[in-house]
Image (cartoon, rainbow, N blue to C red):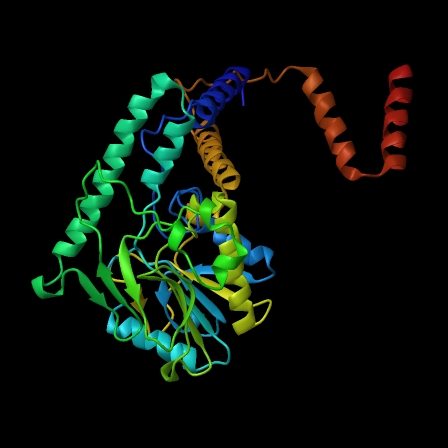
Length: 390
């Protein structure tokens, strides 16, 4: 490679790295609100993500993984934690799969966390409280937009249901949800404060006045089920042990207002999360195989066979590794393009004159070097010197 081409290649590589990694990131106008997921760069930092609670399970000594479908690959799990991104109850097919799974093993646990909460409005409320006065009006507008988005999501989800089923969402005997708040609440109406009415075994281990639990619906279970945390008219956390579960147990959590990423900033919420982990360990034991099930509207798909392995995505790489991978790919492309083509018009190299005696000397020296016989080379050189002296 000539000196000019070498400089051109270095300049192209520098430009590529500068464009790929040194430019300022585009300012995001909205926070990440992806719901019920903990894997990957775009979900681990979401307000509504589950990376923190998954990390708490891992710190407790459990093996934590994530799946997006019900298949034989997770049938050996000891614990399944499910944050469905769906306001509707589980489909009968999904419910039967879980009941069969609970019966087929000893001490298995399913943790079901209802979709009755969104953390974005709470985030903007906290931001307004800490922001300087000149920024508060802008943040209030973002808060109102978040409230509209959450209310609209609930409204359209409810509109998909049959008219005679709106407002009431049974789940085939697991639990029953009844709406107690308006779909489009009055912006001047204060949210119901449930702190003064929290009761149950778990409420005795926390300072209920410092909690920020938000309830939008009313959840009821059977009288024989164990209420671990509840209010005057709703079950917040329940433990269900029924014949169709065998030796397994089902924990019904009304919503993620104390288990999602933003909610776990609150110390009392972390204590409640620890109570949940302790209850799971009491049921399933320590060092369990814990699977976080991630699903969208309609719930997870049920597969009789394991789905084909998908190619790795950015969700499989932590942010620093994925950034380095992109830079390495870009640099490899530049190296390939820089070493492959010839830029400019090709020029014929000047042929060396055949009368140059120096070429004869270099050729002879090269032949002697190839012989790899030091004594022979010295002998031939000495012979040539003696011949020249005559």
